[in-house]
Amino acid sequence: MSEQEVSAYIEAQDEPKRSTLQAMRASILEIEPRLEQVIAWNSPQFKLNGKNVAGLCAFKSHLTFSPQSAEVMTALAEDLAEFVVSKSSFQFDMATPVPKALVAKLLKARIQEIEAK
Image 1 (spheres, rainbow, N blue to C red):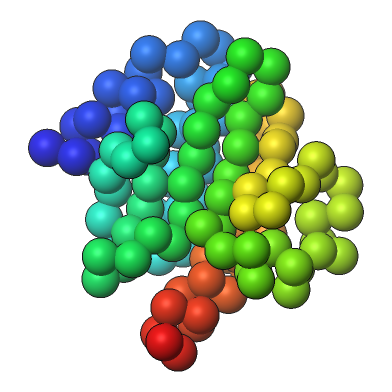
Image 2: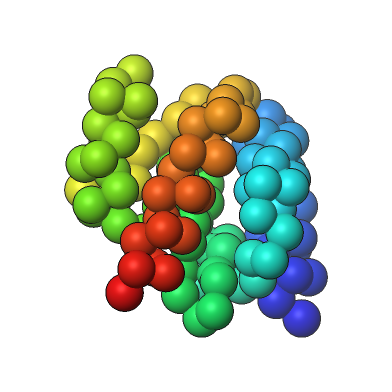
């Protein structure tokens, strides 16, 4: 059910947001196939063992990616220097997916954090 809800969320977006979100979702699931897709906070979230690992959200003029952790954001601040960053998420261009290497780094850091707790 949740996977269909995530698909519906993405399909409801205008281009280029739709294609960018599809690419981001594919990257996230390719990097970490164990992730469960859900809708939470009215946006797609990816969970591992019930814990939030990453989230995507579409806004009027940008998209956001959240590793669901202020600690991960702080630890990878150098990697995120080119983005508009908040406490636990960052904005990216609606026509340009976040580079897969950076997504992998963010996911691995968040999963390590979850597994250490």
